Image 1 (tube, rainbow, N blue to C red):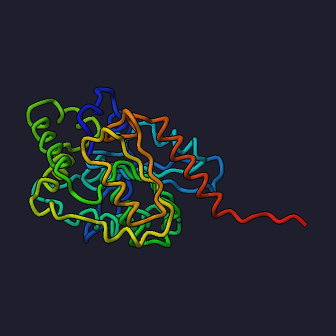
Image 2 (image 1 turned 135 degrees about the horizontal axis):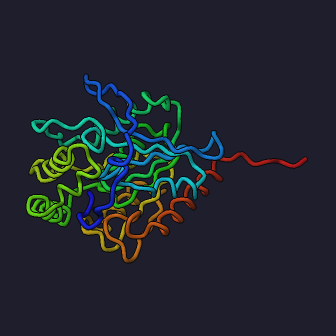
Length: 289
């Protein structure tokens, strides 16, 4: 999710530059997916894949992915999912199914990697909110394809506090200028907002739960959450750790649902340190003779 207060009236990358897109075969269609690739000093550096939240896009990250890649020495992939940013919009008549995050992990991500020539990569993921849930699902479905995952404010089950905040976001969208603000980051703000809002407020979605997938994750996990997160309780990340004991938890003070917005430097330092430790675990030792 993207709390309305994180929206600013500054010009976004979506409006300032012509977005780069790649055609992706997905569910019998060809979709244009907006993306940007971030280089690193070392061409063989780890690839860090950024998965945005329920109202996010490549542009809404602003310059934070570049900052994290610089701090961690990683290459980066930032993209907008179908229906978001400058990617192909979702038709108004199309509704996300209850299993839409499973579909993103199982089918959409591999299709995007294939289209960009990255299918052979074993990336690190940084996923925020819904993007964090997708990262967890991908790591569970394809454990051999993931080096590590960091998730910020992820969802593994549906809580009353989440639904209440999403209902409030609906009122904000209908009664304020939130649509205009979202329009700075999305080709079709209605596509982004109603796709997200309608599925989370669908009564069938209350039973959504991905905890059963978590024990299948083999890679290291970093789970970050703000102690003032208005879209979920700390029980979200505690349940991840219970199902996947290799999970390290980080709770940030003075932080709501978007750690990279509310505590950008602390989040960078925590994630960069986590990536460095994961790299050390997989680096062969040099033996002296």
